[in-house]
Structures are given as C-alpha cells and as structure tokens.
Length: 341
Ligand code: TYM
Image 1 (cartoon, rainbow, N blue to C red):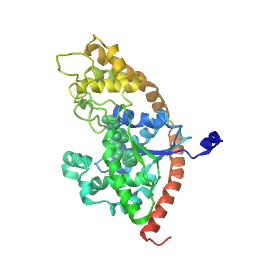
Image 2: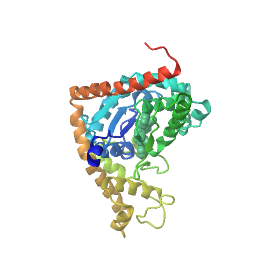
Image 3: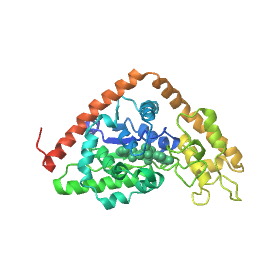
Image 4: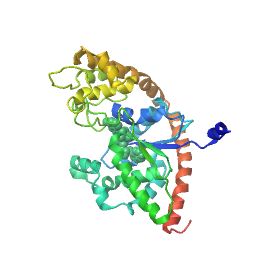
C-alpha cells in the first residue's frame, strides 16, 4: 500500500535558471546544470534561460539570441530531457515581469542595496547602474515563486538572492496568507563555487574573457587543455596535491573540479597524486574535464543545427510554464485587490 502511495504521490518540484549573458562555463555547469540533470528523474523540473536578467548589463542583442538557444541545446545535452523537464525562455512568460512588479512593492530599498551581486556589478558597470540591476532580486523572487517549487538548485553565489526571496515571500504571506510556497536553496556539496583557473581568489565567471582563467562548456579539447596547463597552482614550498582551501586555493580548486567530474573523494585524489607534482596533476585534471565534457559538447553542436527541434522544445515549455505561472499570478492579483479581467 505504502509503495502505491509513494508512486502516486506528486513529485517535488525543482526550478532554476541561468542568464544568457555569456557562454556557459565549467563553473555554471558544475555548480548548477550537473546538479539539475542528476535529479531530473526524481523531480518535476522547470529550467529556464533568464534572458530578462541578462539585459541588466548591456548586451549585444544577436549574442543574447544565440546564447539563449545554445543554452537550451546545452541543457538538453547535459541530460535534461525535454519530455520530462519543462524547459523555457523567461521572456516568453509575461507573468515573470508582472509578478516582479508586484514584488518590487514588497522589497525594501535597504535589503536590495545590501546584495553583494548588486555592489559588484555596480562597481564593474559604473556608467550603467540601472534600476533593473538594483531590483534584480525581486525578478528572481518572481521567477521562483510563480512556480511554487520545493527546491531551487543554485551555486553558492546565488544563496543571498534565494534568502532575500524567502524574506519577500514571508513578508507577502504574512499580509495575505499562504500564497507562496517557500522553497529551499539546494547547493551541491562539491562544485558550488568553482574559481578562476588563473585567479583562484575570484569566481569563474561567464562574463570574463579567456585570459581570466575560465573554461567554457563548448571549448574544444585543445583549449580546455591549454587552460588547465596554465592554471595557477600554489607557490608553497610543499609542492604536493593536498586539499587546503585556505593555504592552497589553486590546488584545492583543481581538486574540486577533478572530484566533481570523476566522483573521486579528496582523499582518493591525494593518494592518486602522492609523490607527484603539479606538472603531472594539471594535465590529468584537464583530460578528465575534456572527457567529461566531450559528449555534452558533441550533442550540443548536433542540437544547435536543429533549430526546428529547439523551437518545438521552448514552445512546449512555454505552454506548460505559463499555465502554472498564470495560476499563481491570478491568486496574487486577487490578494492585492486588482479587479479580475
Ligand atoms: P548565473 O547565470 O550567474 O549562474 C547560473 C548558475 O550557475 C551557478 N554558477 C556557479 N556555480 C559554481 N561555480 C561558479 N563559478 C559558478 N558560476 C555560476 C550560479 O550559482 C547559478 O546557479 N540570478 C541567477 C539566474 C536566475 C535564477 C533565477 C536562478 C534568475 N532567476 C531563479 C535560480 C532561480 C544568475 O545570475 O545565475
């Protein structure tokens, strides 16, 4: 009996997104998409390309369009089967922008100004500190709350935004009753914060250029190898592969990447490279990454040639997503006092 109940119980819902503001990196893959794909069979999943978020920083329109479709191909190539997962483009679901407006009226100036990402991005784009950059977390809260998910799988850097979403949702629910389900962030144990290969003090980011030590999901094998061979290791006298995030951040980052793509523990990695120097370690990590990414890259390239298929996926995704989103938005509009259409 309990087995039957378990089988028929509705699956928990997961939701997340990535901005097409740059090409997907190994960081976004290990911190987010890999984690999504590993759980795609256990959850009812909603994943989207966050194009509304991308324009908070100036973009070349043709690049946004290309990256949005490439990102969809990459989601599928990473194992997100469109038959089982709802894959959609954020701007196709007008309810995101509408709920974001409502939530803007329940988000406080002080809490938005405390966001690390806002401070970082404002410092990097001094000539374009626009209102969208500031209210970005209200839109992100809307993205999530529209779908009433249980879990939001993200990398470490998005935790602060997910926490602010909690505060906004609690504030709203506190006034109007239980309108929103309040989900938890779901952060992977290994790979939640992949650092730049040439500057292990800063996050590997898709908006940076090649010289800043990032690896792209679509980089050809020789480029991946080049990036790993020139990765910064530590200038300590010890010269051995040992996990010590504080004192050996470069080596620790490479160990994290190696652990994430091979499934090995840090202890196993330390044993494997005992008595061997960084010159041996770095290309082995590079090769493991190349082999891990190879099928993803090949499948993405194949899917990118089939625009009609990609279109059918995002159209079907939009249909499913807008049904769920509209239900929540209607409830919200009613609660705040808007007259029904
Ligand atoms: P974005 O596009 O910056 O990053 C996408 C996802 O990848 C993770 N990530 C990383 N993880 C580990 N190491 C790294 N170096 C690394 N770089 C990126 C991020 O934590 C993220 O999970 N605001 C979000 C997109 C978004 C969203 C949402 C996410 C919009 N609406 C609703 C969840 C739910 C963002 O800018 O992620």
